[in-house]
Amino acid sequence: MVAMSSATNPVAVIGVGRMGGHHARILSTLAGARLVAVVDPDAARADAMAQKYNCQACASIDQLLTLTPKVKAAVVATPTAFHHATASALIDRGVHCLVEKPLAATPQLARQLAEGAAARNIILQVGHTERFNPAVQAVLTMTLPPRFIDVHRVSPMTFRSLDVGVVLDMMIHDLDIVLTLAKSPLTRLDATGVAVIGPHEDVAQARLEFESGCVANLTASRLALRTERRLRLFSEEGFVSLDYQNRDGVIIRRSDNQQALDEVRQALSQGQPLSGMDYSSMVKVDRLNLAPDAVKQDALTAELTSFLQAVAQGTPPVVDAWAGLAAVETAHKIVETLKSHRWEKSIRPVIP
Ligand SMILES: NC(=O)c1ccc[n+]([C@@H]2O[C@H](COP(=O)([O-])OP(=O)(O)OC[C@H]3O[C@@H](n4cnc5c(N)ncnc54)[C@H](O)[C@@H]3O)[C@@H](O)[C@H]2O)c1
Image (tube, rainbow, N blue to C red; front, side, top):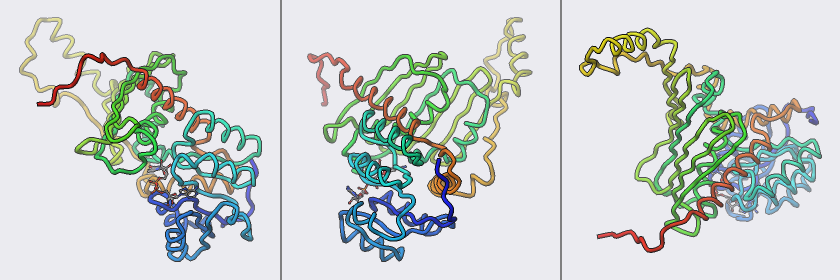
């Protein structure tokens, strides 16, 4: 990787809608960066952001690249359909990129970006922000080989990101986490889904099997009436329940409950009736041990800080393009599978 010399590299945000607005706000406050420009074809939006953060408004990447000094790094927060064209134009001109998730709309385009960045020694990080969630970080540091992972990410319709389905919009976050936890090649996949609002699926359910034997069930919906973002991991060594939204979770370790388990087994072997026992009071449950530094920062600030560090030090990013590609490849297989799911045509839902 090519290391940068200055501690305050000139940076830009491409696409300053909802996510790009957050990136611009945070970048304007971080010590390791100087926000010099925002790019958006919506001139009113670009001007308003530029005024707010005292930087240049640009209508295109070409215009951005005429600025002096040249930007060293950029955040790509355009709609997914433009990630590939935008990021490849930047990578070709030697600009390090943090591309919002999903890395690209198709595996082929995601691979082109990953290979292009690698060939040019460009840092390409992917915006899988949940990796910087302190509860996720706590689970990733544990030695807890998963046997079964169950994930729910459901929320009410926001009418955003409708250019892609719920798999690329929401489930992609969990695919990145599940692939990181499973650490094993995918061997089998099944999926179903339903499109309600437009042509893309709004509800999806996927079952992944890994070479290790680990199985992951993922549910995503953008049509729910409440928000839930939860991951449960079952391992021989224990159980973890992680609440993404509240950045918290609990762990039940087998080793901490060994005595209670032995007593129950002995009682059962002696034929003792246990139906009157209070199960929940027998189980030792601990809160996840979150790193104090991680708790202080919101995940997006941690993600941007990590990206700037990778750029300044020339070190590989925490969520690299290959991880972004793996998530897009898996998401693509899920979408293809749910599209080909066979429905019995003669059965019609009956709504009274
Ligand atoms: N990491 C996360 O948690 C998270 C959450 C939401 C969205 N996202 C991702 O962020 C990206 C943007 O989503 P959003 O909700 O902010 O969308 P948005 O529609 O609010 O904003 C997109 C912006 O990009 C601009 N734009 C469109 N085409 C462009 C182009 N060719 N060049 C430059 N700018 C262009 C639009 O004018 C708009 O201002 C998507 O890829 C989405 O998947 C990530």
